Image (tube, rainbow, N blue to C red; front, side, top):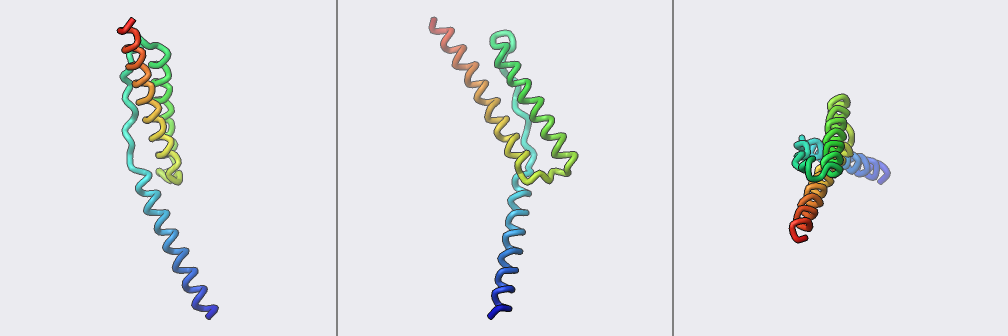
Length: 103
């Protein structure tokens, strides 16, 4: 009975290991950098924030390359969040443009 528990436990551990490796591989797909498309002339602060996000994205990419992409999926997740933040900044600029047209 004890031997059976050890075998089952080992099999579960191996399954978890392979499952986490598959997940890590999916997380390491290249993510394109966020688009810099906010007008610096109309929205200098939003455009500057977007530039800083792009710089952060590039630094994360460099860290991934230096570590051969093995950062547990956290760097890839950070890049996804940076992309989301960049899109939110673009929406903020669009909202501002719309509000200024109405006045």
